[in-house]
Amino acid sequence: MTDFARTLTSAELHSAEASRLPLNIFLGTSTWTFPGWRGTIYTREYKSDRDFSQRCLEEYAAIPWFRTACIDSLFYNPPSPTTLQRYATQVPESFRWVSKVWERLTIISYPKHARYGVHAGQRNPDFLNVELFKDRVLRAYDDPAARSRTGPFVFQFAPFSKQTMPYEEFTERLAAFLAGLPNDFEYAVEVRNRELLTPRYCQALNETRVTHCFNHWSAMPGLREQMRRIAECGGLRADFYVARLLTPLGITYEGAAKLFEPYDKVLRPNPQMRADVVTFAKRALSTGKRAFVTANNKAEGNSALSMATIGALILSELEKISS
Image: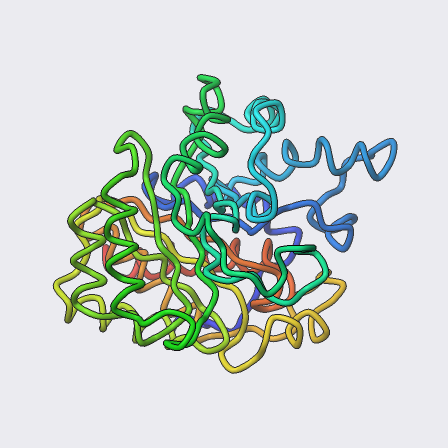
């Protein structure tokens, strides 16, 4: 019987068995520059903290379980072409990163938070602005090396009330936005309102070959329940899947940060979440689709060890099927 609670040790990160993971399964973490990983995940010598943050992606990408990483920082600022080019020099050609999309495109109304300055509390005039996305985001991916390593873009929508925007209006505006996107990139939509998982939502995705980003997050249904709801709506036509493991169910982002910092070890293994990701990967394999799965440290405490463990669990389950 597979032990979904056991976590790999840092010594097992470079296990040769990782090479047996099917090539259409892309596992990785949400960002990678964590000081708490030094000495366990990261063992090379770095001249300074800046040198570490600038160069550790190369060491990360050398860990055989990791074929992707989510660039979370792009949520706060549009990408810099030079940054993407630097990333491209540090990862193999087979690597595919997942790009979070600038929040200026996905915020309906700016929260009343100091970092939004004069926009705090105001309606966002650039919500789902296709031309702004093309100009400020996609243009940065023109470099061939960066472009060839680019996987899905994730549009993350914070939870909102129907008073902020009726759910039907949101879905229609989303459908129009997706229809205007260039079709030479891949896109995923991450909603954090369970009310949005409707047949019309799935239709909007399928009309444009966009996928739903299955997210393990505080107030959303678990991954298995999201998969069930999407299947009942007719499934997804995109030829890739995306999942992001963010926080334990029922625990806020801030609460998870307090629980798990400094992210140097897995503190709370989540067997159900891990089993659901294995099911997710098996579904991708059975349909011939690619699957991108990334984890945040706030899911279990150390996303690198979590994702390497999930990779080993996928292999274990596949061996059962083939034996």
